[in-house]
Length: 510
Image: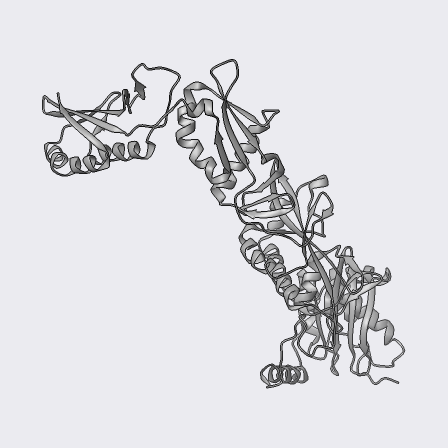
């Protein structure tokens, strides 16, 4: 017969855990959701897995000679409050069943440490530990700093006898808004056969706590028996960090979605801030794949170089309009928050600003059935000046002969007209390109042939206007003026030199 000083009763379990936790545990126990993983009846130490809806929770209980119970559970409630939960109550009821044959006096209180006045512990608050337990904790503390102490790891070591596990990291697109995507990852894990991880967060928690995790009824991961390669372990560590971040800030709700777009328990969303660390691990991991419409690519590829994009400008037949043809954009999925573009089953790194432009350009093309953008004649010059240089950073730009023959590129000559009326210094400014004169304040230009396309020096023009503003000139609809005599003197002696160095500049007195 097993020697036990005190026998567990339902009354004692209820006092240890509190009535709400006891009732919850009683339901789990009676439904058979408590499975023993290990037991040492002589030392009254028990380990079990308790199923609570979709959660598989790990519970440990040790009952000392004084009848006091030391308990732990992996559920979030216990981790946050350290109050005994229904999962612990379920295991205590299972222990009562196993020890029911043993004769022992029944306690009326949770342990000998409690007096009759101690009934206020019905909420399940942990009881004070005995001196025996304090000695046990002291031995554990000594073990932490002993020379033989080594932190447990799920990664395989050089002389590891554990069986190495195979892993597939499957990256998928998760749509959370119109034409907006996040990256998510799913796992397949196993030995000779890979099993889908239906609850990825439970597996990551098990890896973090060095505990077992059941994938299916055919396979259970056991850290004492199974290990991971160093490359897989390092990538799993990054996923564990994301899981911890998600638990702390509950970020998964930001992309919860509904219906078919809801995030499943199989997927872990990768926040953009974590992507650089994930990207670094993917560079040395050959077990990562990209899933596109349910089809897995070969090991995930990152491609350098220009995007496979072509922009062609041409004159529209039959009228004076222009068109821009775009090729290749419909093959791309833009992940602007990650600075990525997915094209032909590979990922390409793209600057965030360029990603944003690609996203907006895709939205523009949705209004055109043939990947063509029509351009009015009055904006073609601005397109050539401002848009084309940006497009050249994204892909190849071609300009048809009919347009290039019309392009006029001449040096900028700025003309400044100065006059003084009633104590005011008046200034007029023109930008001249050959025989074309432009007032930068109203963008009015002299009459000329509409066939030519002037490419203006936008950066030089902006620099001259900035210098005029820095000189403390006030703007009117057609010019500038200044009333401060001291500032007028500074303009003549200092600012005017800067204007001359900025461009071919001419000063005329009116």
